[in-house]
Amino acid sequence: MIIKVDHTIYERLTATEKQVVNYINMNADKIANMSIVDLAEGTFSSPATVSRTIKKCGIGGFAELRYILSKKNNEVSGSGQVNEILEKSLREATNTVEQLTIDNILNAIELIQKAKRIYILARGLTELVAQEFSFKLQLLGYNAFQISDPNVMEKITCDVKKNELLVIFSLYGKTAELINSAENAVSMGAKVISCCCTDDTPLRSLSTVYLKGYKSNYVSIKKFEVTSRMPLNVISRILIDYLAL
Image 1: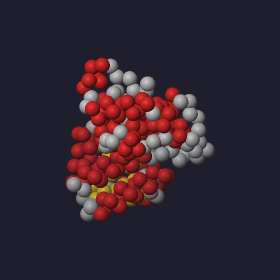
Image 2 (image 1 turned 180 degrees about the horizontal axis):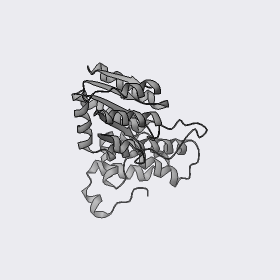
Image 3 (image 1 turned 45 degrees about the vertical axis):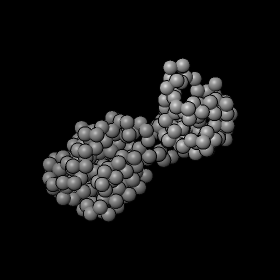
Image 4 (image 1 turned 90 degrees about the vertical axis):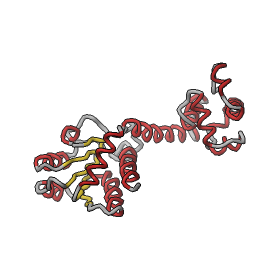
């Protein structure tokens, strides 16, 4: 039995939810290879019902259930590895959302809306996140510019105005030119929003608003620094979606 629920919880489930629990327990060897849509069709329910039932039984969601089943079945290849990868992505996205406070998001939104000009700074692979963020801000009518050249960003931030804004995307917050740019902006009285995945960075104290994402320790390509920027993409999307309302 994969999903174990005590009598009290079981009695609170609807007839359809009980059917979902029974189906999972009777088909534990198949669930790891199924999608939530497959499970919904197998129980004549909906994906929302499946998700709700699993959470009522104390499991975080369908992805977590598949991951648990993969480990329980000692799957070291194929679906087991895929489920582990899916669980990592889910954990990064979920934990990033949970770590963000509503006040910080709204404060960042207010700074963006009031800024006369917005400079989006990033280096390396994170430039891709910054490019998308800058492009979408431009589509929404904001005066936004994405800068990746270290010489340009340090020179521009020496002349930044008080009514202008820096938005910095950095996975580790250790890049010297980004830190120097933030210091320049602060000295000129400009506001700074930093989006990082660590507390151990000077950008935290330099920022008017600091948005922290969650980064998994897992690295798929260990020879190069190509760690997933998913947490930063999640933060970027949250800000853009709110601004687009």
